[in-house]
Amino acid sequence: MPPDGAAEPAEGPGEPAGLSRRQRRNRQKQQRQQEPPAGSDGERGSGPGPPDPSGPAEAPPEPRSDRSAALRARMEERLLGARFRYLNQQLYTGSSRDAARLFRDDPAAFHLYHRGFERQVQRWPERPVQRIVRYLRRRPASLVVADFGCGDCTLAASVKNQVHCFDLVPLSPRVTVCDMAKVPLAAEAVDVAVFCLALMGTNLQEILGEANRVLKLGGTLLVAEVASRFEDTRAFLRAMTQLGFKTVSKDLSSSYFYVLEFTKTGPARPGPAPGLRLRPCLYKRR
Image 1 (cartoon, rainbow, N blue to C red):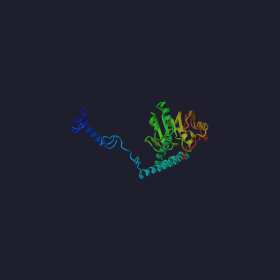
Image 2: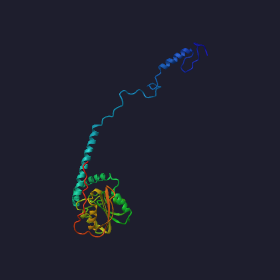
Image 3: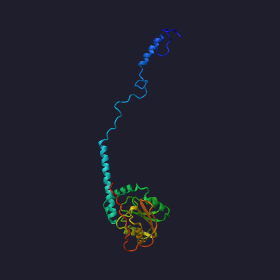
Image 4: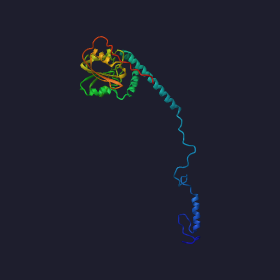
């Protein structure tokens, strides 16, 4: 090692030759002082810089147009709900003829009603029409079915049977528009008659009498109806015997709807059937 102060060869690129040890140390010290610290905006710093004293940027306020659109949507939803409740009340507190006249004069009202009805049923753990579908799939596909109050014809689209679809407004090309108390079928023309959430109107005896008329002797009547509508289930079943039906089975296990199966034993007997009562299915304003 050369003595202190003697010249040494340069050890790094860019350093002039002939510098003494002391000169080289001073030069390296000056270079370190000139370098930017790590994490700054210099070439060697790659980490984040100091925090922005202004803090995180605030989200821009919701545009006035978006607030207006949301308010308008809520108002329209309330109006539709009120309209659905009104139509529903009309269906349950008037006769089937009144219902047919209502939707004949205003077909768009039926589409609105069906939308509201679907929203109610979607909250249930099971749709009653699926129970009817499973029942028919266990029976011969040769059985002819009449679907009273068929809606969008879910039943007809789900089974291989021939299904006559009846309702007040055609939500599907399969639908025959008519009053449920007077369907365009010959007497004893079908093997199965179905009322799936469709026993509306104050003339229940007339409507179920029509089901008896179109059913073959020994044919099946299936009724799925909202559980809370039954004031006295035993009285209802007794009244069905007067209409020419015998109870085959009853499933009262669901708190949402009951499923009743009857067989036709003969024509309906004349006279009123006082136990044939169902409460109106009315919805409260939420």
